Amino acid sequence: MEEILDPKVLAKLSNLYLVARTVVEGFIAGIHRSIYKGFSVEFFEHREYSPGDDLKYLDWKVFGRTDRLYLKTFREETNLRSYLLLDISNSMNYKSDTVSKLEYGTFLAASLSYLMLKQRDAVGLVTFDSEVRTFIKPSSSPLQLHHLVENLKNINSKERTSIGEVLHKIAGNIKRRSLIILISDLLDNPNEIINGLTHFIHKHHEVIVFQLLDPAELSFPFRGQYEFVDLETKEKVRADALSIKPAYKKLFQEFLDFYKKSCAERKIDYVRGVTETPLNQFLYQYLNRRAQYK
Image (cartoon, rainbow, N blue to C red; front, side):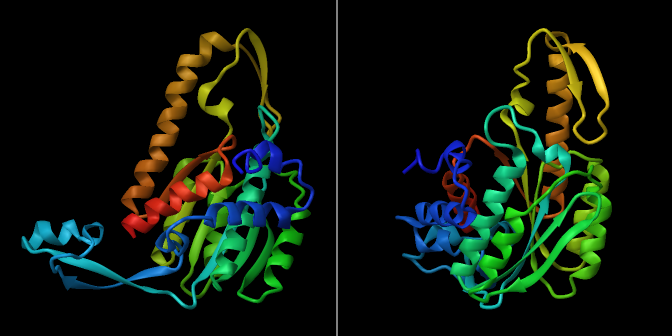
């Protein structure tokens, strides 16, 4: 099954619905219900601990304040509304192997749509680069998956991005409290992106950020003389790869650390994914963590 769920194999499937179903059914097989329902629960109230209760639901923050043991209890959110925000700008087209960040992001968006609609949650889709290109309102209709998949199949990226500015526009158009899921490489001005995400928080939305990266962006495996081309501005820089590698890795790590820290400070769920990771594994690791800390 793992071989089928390899992103390289999924990229060869022309049917995006089949990709989503393959990923989600592979993910669901054998997992605990609390993980499967990871998107569809909300905190309800505390109750005092009793011997035999599951310790993983203990609220240690409350214990630290009161020196008493309380459990967090949850209820299923029956009308969860979610928006998948997919960055389709040119930087997402980068790939060092067979799967681009945009392809992986499209697989992820389709799979999350399939998963949430299977839970009878309402899900919508927004695609954007420098502007909003698609805005589909959430629905739990059985026809919604077909609608979303058809739009994801016809993505045509050709613009540079302006993530922060676009996030403000999207936040202004979403009136009801929702789950906002951003799928992007976040390769834009970090401060402006965080400001845009904060706009959602101020409007009482819950926010999840999936930052998708190519393995080469993390490891910088290049050697010798290279001409590096910005996929959005087309700016070119010639450099000896080995001589700039230490500075590149330092700056890129600072870039990643900024997002991790800034999101944590705002209670934004930040998840980093690499395009070589099987999608069911990526979903399992994330939702398992979410089920534990929700």
